[in-house]
Amino acid sequence: MSSSDPNSVYHFLVTQELQEWQSAMRKSPTFWNRTTKSVQKKVNNIIPEKVHNAITKAIKEITRAVIFGSGFTTRSRKEIGPLEEIETKVKERINFYSSSAAVEGAATGFGGFLLSLADFPLWLTLKMKMLFEIASRYGYDTKDYKERLYILHIFQLTFSSQQRRNEIFEKMESWELIKEQLPDDFNTFDWRTFQLEYRDYIDLAKLLQLIPGVGAIAGALVNHKLTNKLGKAAMNAYRMRREDFKKFRVLELKEEPVPIYHLPEKL
Image 1: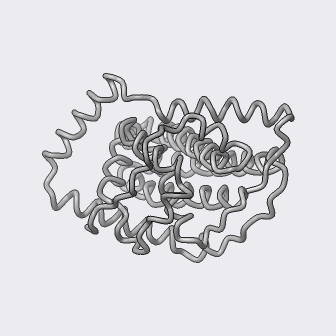
Image 2 (image 1 turned 45 degrees about the vertical axis):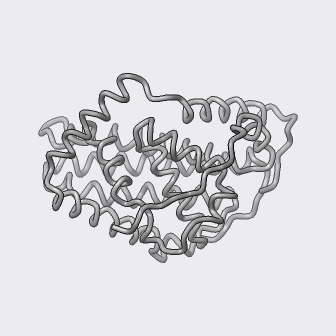
């Protein structure tokens, strides 16, 4: 990716923001993080395996449809310009998608339980469309299967426990090397962990959407906040891959060899 003027005020501000974000991604899980995750694991162990399998299959198929749908994969790659110009457009699109997600969340929340169930695929589609558009704005070809996997990594990074976030971020820091080790089969992606982490992350917030009277407000606020959070994570994830910001990552990399990327057997 092309570089921007390292002496500009915007470049300086982005550098500070990127370094703060990277530190947050590397932060060790707190006691509260570990306790919450432990409780969620116990709850998941109580849920019958066939339920887990059904949820995993549903998320897998919905996400596959989004990832491989022609409305996503045919998006043209944008011409690369100055970083500030790129990010002005990106921020506009994040605001657009966050507002759209809020309207959708309010509508489904107002409709009660059944309509709230429809929120999942609708909101997921909005978030994925936003990520595809952001990727293309930064100059990445979303027709490339491995770039689509990077998009899923950004999604996981945003909607995962801190422990899982640490693991994902370590891979993303060395993505140019790791992507060469990725298998060609999309089915080998760890869908089980993907759905558990995502569901655990948004469970409490989305449960409020089912409560009569406050569902619409909760749906709007949650969808707006989390969509905006996902957009900001995507910005930093693509900044990290730019030549003019790589030096800040390299300085903090461990001297240990980069681990080989292992994916679990297909479900």
